[in-house]
Amino acid sequence: MTLEPAADTGIPMARALSESPALPVDSVDARRLIRSGAHTGHTAAMAPAFVQGNLCILPSEYATDFAAFCQRNPKPCPLIGTSAAGDPRLPALGEDLDIRTDVPGYHVYRDGRLVDEPTDITAYWRDDLVSFVLGCSFSFEQPLMEDGIRLRHIERGDNVAMYKTNIDTVAAGPFSGKMVVSMRALSPAEAIRAIQVTSRYPNVHGAPIHIGLPEQIGIADVEKPFAGDAPKMAEDEIPVFWACGVTPQVAVEQARPSLCITHKPGSMIITDLKNRELADG
Image (cartoon, rainbow, N blue to C red; front, top):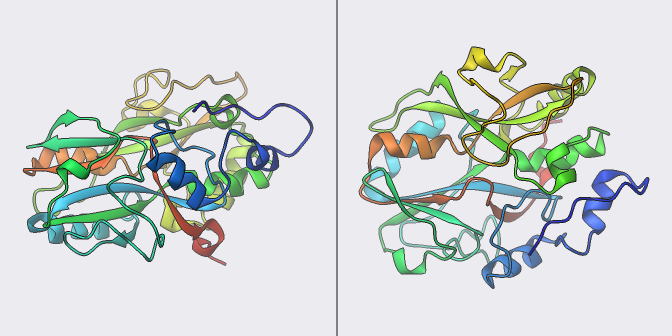
């Protein structure tokens, strides 16, 4: 399935996206589309009113340390859901949600090394696996667009650009490493407004952690992201960086658990929670 950018029709962008026939606007419909294998790409702008989540699945022996890692690093790892060991369902996030089939693309790690990128992890499922769902910045994109802020990657149908930084996370057990960030190119005025809007959503990364001067956080070239699509910045735009839920994938490479399954960057789990339910104030 191809994600088509919204046409310049004069309709507000958020409305144009939600009315596009190419994009499901309901979370249940989005999961069904993904579960059927009809959509295996990124989920930016899919079911835009609903909370999306990053995923990290680990054997139960690692669960306590990983939960502590999330608690110590709430900006990149805002925890919004945890499963019971061996249970692929998280009914608090979606009545029919099945963590084994409802993500468009997965990363499978063994001993910290990426070994597979399936679209279904049923074959990997075990009775000792615990699923952690973390808030995702895709969930504050609708509020940004409703405030009149243009998001170029949404207009182009691209995945958001993500980068490894030189910012250390706080270690917990074997989990440590550098923070990953996502970037949106905005005008200075938009950047100021974006801080105000996203500050209300701490459970999906909240306010930016850095604006401009990417070299100060270890990013040598914004045109070469670690994951996602390369941005196309206009001369009057500056890079605005948010903490990113891909950070645990870097921590997994350091921790080297026997097995870990995550989402493919940009390919998220779509929940039944509404974005407005996570807003402060």
